[in-house]
Length: 469
Image 1 (cartoon, one colour):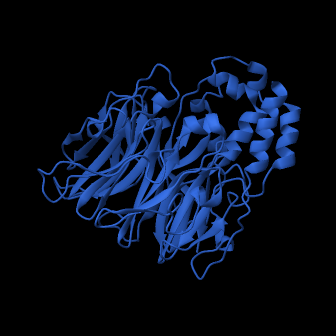
Image 2 (cartoon, one colour):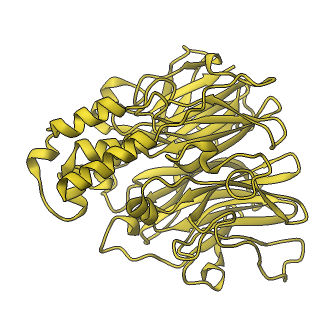
Image 3 (cartoon, one colour):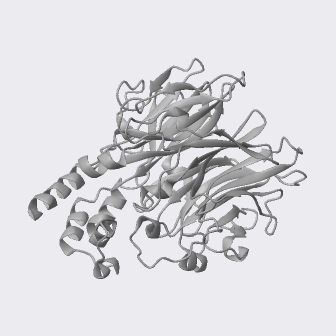
């Protein structure tokens, strides 16, 4: 039986590679246009203390009265392996908000909010800043940069200038989870909520998917029942498009859905646009949305359960037109002729999207670095099963599995970046986490200062920031 299990893992590793190579295409950025603009984890001393693993949120913000064009801000998630269960001795988590200062140097990231300085206990302190959005309050006309928090206490933070010492907790609720999405729609700021702790914490119960709104003074609930479907256990992403607010759900049993609500007629009920995960049921969540030209592009997450049972399962991209018809960009019926995950079975998430200089870019999360980590650190698997294995958790590896990993390691393991000019013809910009396979996802992406800025998640060496121009 052990040999059979090992053989299955070997086959998964061998078959996981993708033969696609980086492609220049007829324009847009190419692999060689990108340079690294940060140390891992932003800086060595802080990363050694806090483990800055994910550039979880990103926004460009220019406050009123600014004499320059503003700055790019990034919010972090720290100690990711601890949350996943691999680090048994839990440490406090102190996420930060940084801003890029290319006027100082090409790799300077200034700290504007360090939650170590807030004096809050672990329950009240945010465990990460998951999403970020500039919004001019409908209540008083003041422009703020808002940041959605994740923690035992879900919170929304803001600053009018972005400067250190100006950040405040605008709103919080004593409810475990996170604000996963922020969208400005019809002069209001909308927030989507999801209790993602329930994915790994057996004592945490999933909450009904809901959406809230604020005018900068009050916060109220817009949706509280997952569109009437108890299997919609979270709203992962929201976006304003064509006069409506669109929302993507997490539905692991029936496949992800897309709904629209809060349209031109305030009394109109929500309308379901996509069901069953779009091209296939295995798309259990719609993670990200981005409006480009005349369509709303939507990226999915492949089923976690099916990935554990059936091996590698890739996620899909769809796009929705202004008449609410949708087309598959990848997967079954693709108008682009692209298979799921753009041909790479290990692309389990479509994690980020952005327009830059007339081209549309899509970033993925590659499951293979994490799978290899689990194979070479069996304490991780045992920890998830509730079995303590201190020796393996201390960093020792199984030599045989390490050898298998070395033998079958593919040069394109790591985050992928793709581009298109029309939605139908796609080109691979990079396929290996920009040379570091532990950069397993393009978590965030933003066009800022004439560059396309990428935030790469890396829970092993620390996050990396890259810029393409």
